[in-house]
Structures are given as structure tokens and as C-alpha cells.
Image (cartoon, rainbow, N blue to C red):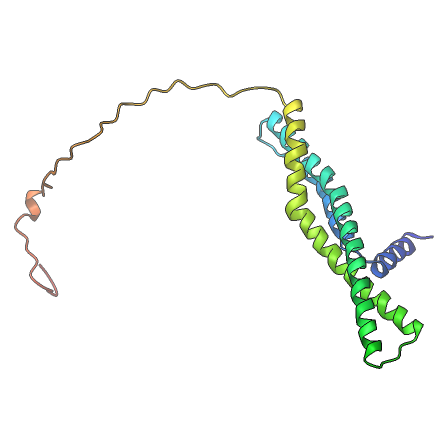
Length: 195
């Protein structure tokens, strides 16, 4: 099998069995590889802060990939349940109104509706994972790991003494002094061509 055949088969398989979690997981995996790498390669930064940022980015994406998968699959199962119940009710209503449907037509309608329900709720599950679940998991998991890994360097305490501020400062009004050149110049309307 040539490389072109391999790519073609992979594209056909992904196209016929397209799920919302595939591209999101691929992006998260790529971010998990490339973002820490580019952070470490950044010039002019403190090496310790680069390592800290790269490790944090990598941990975030390690958490993100399985979370996308889990939330998407759970939402798809929930979508299958909702769609099958909804279609069963719709088929019962059709038969109640006098329409006769064969088992084949019922199965085809149910399968199509279930596929749409799974796809829609899987997308919602992935969005929910990105907006709610992953940030919450990162807050719970990443911070304790980073505290254990990072050195416990506390920033030095600065002993800065501020000048004392008066409670009621008094403001004095001073008159603006104009240079003697402009004292006798008066503006009396609009003049063209001179002063």
C-alpha cells in the first residue's frame, strides 16, 4: 500500500465516520506537542519561567485530550437516548394518525434521527468540555502539580516607606504670569492680514 493510498483511506474513513471529537482531540494533541516546544525555544526569557510555562501548557493539553473524548462520548450516548425516545414518540403519533410504516422504514427513520442527535449533542459536549470541564480540571489538577514541581522561591519583600500624605491638603491658587511681550495685545474680533 502506497502513501497516497494510506492517506486516501484515512480521509475516507474519517469522512464517513466524522465525529466532533476527532478534530478537537487532534488540535489538543498538536498543542500539547508544539506549544511547549515553542515556549522552550523562545529567546530572551528566563529559563526557569520557560520550563514552568511549557510544563503547564503540556499538562493542560494532557488533561484536555481525554476530557474532550469523555465529554463527547457521554453527550453522544445521551443524544442517542433522547433521539430514540423522541423518534419512538413521533412514530407512535404517525401510526396513531393512520399512517402505516414498515419495520424497515421505522428502523431507517430511527437510525437517521439517532445519528443526528448523537452528532449534535457530541458537539455540545465538546464545547462544554472546552468551556467548563477542562478549565475546572486544570484548576484542580495543574495547580497542585505545579506547586510540587516548582521551586519554592518567594519573591523578596520590599521595604518601601511611603511619604506621609496629609488628610486635608490646602491648595493655593497662583496667578499665571505672562511674558511682557504679550501683555498689551488684545484680540478684538477676526482680522485678516495682521495683528
